[in-house]
Image (tube, rainbow, N blue to C red; front, side, top):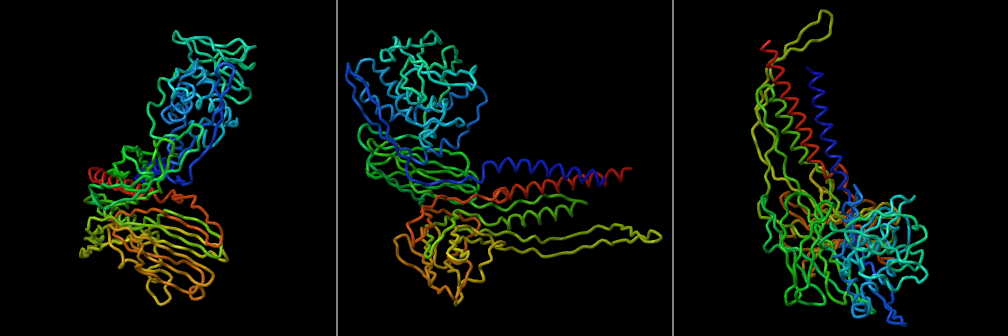
Amino acid sequence: MKKRLLQTSLLVIIFGLMWISSLSEVIGTENSFTSNYDRTYSFYVQYGDYRFNHKAYTSVTPSSYDYYHSKSHFINGDSDYSKFITPGAFKSIAESIQNVTRDIPNSDEQFANAVLMIVRQVPYIRSDVKYPVEALVDNSGDCDVLSLLAASIMKAGGLDVVLLYYKGLSPSHMNVGVYLPYKPIYRTWWMAPTSFEYNNKTYWMAECTPRGEWKVGDRPALLTNAGPQIISLENCEKSSAARISSCLDSPLLPSSISITLSSENSSASESVRTFTISGSISPRDSGKSVLMYVSHDGSSYDTFRTVTDDLGNYSLTWNCTSTGTYYIKTSLVDLANYSGSDSEALTVFIGYKPVVGVELSGPGDFFNRAATTLSYKIFASQGSKNFLKNNLTGANVLLSGEFIMLSNGQKTVVPKIKKIITVPTSELQIMLPGRRTMVIPRIITTVSESEQTINNQVGFILRHDGGDNYTASVRVLDEGTSQTTEQLDGDNSAFMNASMDTRENTWYKVIAKINEDKRTTELYDANGTLIKNAETRNDALGSGEFGVLMDYDINTIIAFKNLKAETLSQPAQPVSKNAAPVSELEFPAPYIGLTLLLAIAVAAIAYIKERKRGAND
C-alpha cells in the first residue's frame, strides 16, 4: 500500500510540475522601452519619360513591435503564411505612396513598383519568418519575410495580391503575385512578363529580394522553370491594433502621450478590480485614436481603444481578471504628419491571495493539518518580485520612480493555523532482538485560534556591489524574505521607512542616490513637494543595501511608472528593462503549492480507502 501511495503522489506532482513548466514559457519575458524606430525609404514614379523621386518617412513605436513580436510565429501549413499579412499596420505607408500614384496612368502598377523599391531597401539576411513590422524594425529579412512585407503594403493600398511559394526549389523561394487587368507596362523591356492564373484572374510575378531592380512582371532567372504554389490571403489580419506612422517627402513631427492610473472610479476589492487609465496627447487634438496595450506577466497583449476629447485627454476603464503583474502602455497611432508615440510603461502588481487548505476528515486529519499548514506557508513565502533590476557602474548613481497603492481600505486578516490536533493510536515495531512492539497512545492537543494581519513591503533599493558597481532594483518583498526591517529608522539607518508618510490611493515619487561621500533618499508627493529625506555618509554604512521601504497590506494593489536607474557621473544610461526577468519559480509559487496540496489530498484519500479495505477484510 505504501508503495502504491508513493507512486500516486509522485504522479500527481510530476503532472503538476509539467503543467507549471508550460507556464514558465510565458513568464520571464522582459518588456523593453526605447525610442521609436525611424527609417526613410526612397522610391520614384514615372510620368511619360520623366521620373519623380520621393521619400517615405516612417516611424514604428516600440509597442507596435512588441505587439507583433509577442504573437505566435508557428507555421503549421503553407496557408499559415497569410496570418503574417498585416495591411492595417501599413495603411499610412500605403497612403503616402498613393499620394503620388493615385492620379497618374497605370496607378496600381506604379504603386506596386514603388512598394518593391521600398522593400528592396531592407537588407536580405536569412532569418526565420517574421511579421512585417518586425522586418522594418530589425531592418532585415529573407525572401519570405520581404514578400510578406510587400504583400502587406500592397494590400493596404487596395491591390489584390497572393503569395507565390516555390517549394520545389532548394532552398525554397517566395515572392508576390499582383493582379492587374492588363500586361505590365513598366517591366524590364527585354523580359517577357510572367504571370499565373488563379481563380480566373491573372497575377503577375513581383520579386521582392534586393538582388535586382525587379518590377511587376519581371522573373529572376532562378525561377525560369519553377512553378509556384499560390497562397490566398483571405485569412490575413483584418484589422490591426498597431500602426506605423508615415509621411511623404517631409520628416515626421514628434508627438507624445502621457499615462497615469487614477484612484477615481477605481476599485481594488477582492472580487472586482477596476482601474481608470488616463492621460493626454501632444499636440492636443480631439477624436484621435489612443491604443492601450496590456500584457499579463510578460505574455501576449490585450488591446483596448479609445479617442481623445476636445482637450486631447483620454480615459479608459480596465477590468483586471486575475492576480499577477500587468505591464500597460498607451500609444498614439493616427495623428497625420506626426510620428506615433508610446507612453511610459505602467506596471500594476496584484498580489496573490491565501490558498485555501484541503478539507479532509477521519484518519486523514493528519493530511488536513499538513495541507492547511502548507498552504499558508506557501502564501507567506512568495519571495521578492522585481519590477526593475539594473546593473550600474560609476561614482554617482540614481534610482527613481513613482508609485501608488490602491486599496479598498480593508486590511487583510489571515487566521493562524491553530486547531485541535489528534494523533491516533498506533503500533510501532522496533527491530530489536525479540521484535519488541511499542504502542503509541492517542494524543490530543488543543490550541486556541488567533488572527494576524499580513503586511509586505515595497522597496526602492540600491545595492553597493563593491568598487563602482551597483545594482538598482524596485521590488516587493514579503515578511519571509525581507531582512531590512531591523535597519529602519536607526541613527545610521540604511533604509528610510516611508510607511507613516504615505497614504493609499495617492501618487508619490522616490529618489535614492549615491555619490562619492554620501547616500541620499527622498520622498516627494505628486506636486513635487519634499515630504521626507535622509542623508548618510558612506563611511557610516559601508557596503550593502539602502533606499526606501514602505509596508503595504497584501490586498493592496501597487502601480509603478517612470522607473529609472542611471549613472550621473557619465551620460545617462537608459533603462533597457522595465521589468527584470521573473524567476521561473516565483510566478508559479501558488501553482506549486496547489500541486503539492493535491498530492497530499490524493495520498490522504488513498490512505483512507486502504484503511477501510483493511477493516472490511
